[in-house]
Every structure is written in C-alpha cells, then in structure tokens.
Image (cartoon, rainbow, N blue to C red):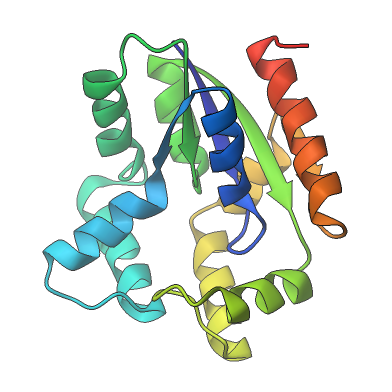
Length: 183
C-alpha cells in the first residue's frame, strides 16, 4: 500500500482531494477528523480553541507523532488491502517520519496565501473555523509550531491554490495522477 499525504495550512484547499479520491476510488483518512473526534470525546464543543488545545494535548500525551499513530493504525486495520490511501491533513514532520518508517509515503503540499485562506475560512462555517483575523493568526501560529512549515517545504509535490478553482483542481489531479501512475 502506498500512502499519499496531503498537507497545507488551514483553508489552503486540502479537502479538494476528497473529490479526486472519489473519482479514483481511493480512501481518504483525515487527521483533522481524528482531532475533532478526540475533542468531542472529551465533551468539548468544536471551536478553534478547543480543537487546537486538543491537538496540543494529544501531542503532549503521545509525543510529536501523536496524530499519525492512531491514523496509521486505523489505515492498517481498515484499508490494508488498498493500493493507495490518502491521509489528509499531515501537520508535523514527526508524523511524516513516523509514517515513512511504516509505509511508503508521498506528500502533496497545497499552498494559498494567508489572505486567501482567511477569506475561505470566514465563509466555510465549520465549527472550528473563525472569521476573526487574530484567531486565524493564532491558529496559523499553532500549526507552524507543529512544524507544518517543514512538511510543506519538504513535500514531494506542491500545488498552488490562489486563482481559479478549476485550474487548481486540474493541477491537483495532474499531480495526483503522477503518484498513482494514471495517464
């Protein structure tokens, strides 16, 4: 099984991979869903502060590989017979290193400017998003403290998502097809 890791700052467009995965019948496991699930398990409502604090606590408890461990266990238990599995939302170089110890992994980084990402997040209406610039910046800082910048800079592939959405999706699909060897 080959894993395809998707990384990028919040609002960069990582979730676009889901539609491509459906098209190519490839499973997607979201690391963010793991954190949101853990937040709810602790009885806390989903908001930027609670989800962020849960991510920090998981890393304090389980180490810097914290989110990768349950994700990879889940992938191996549920999807061991798949040729490809996408792990969406890798944020830490330690997660990358952990996964690479146990599986083949290519990383696609999706990049968008802070201004573009803030505009997207402000209109997305997910519980852990904010339409306050300062909260947005705090979230970015938290993500950067997880070493997401290193993951992005060391990615195998980079796709920029600043302009036309269909151009971005086409670029992402072309990158995706290189990894899964489809013409």
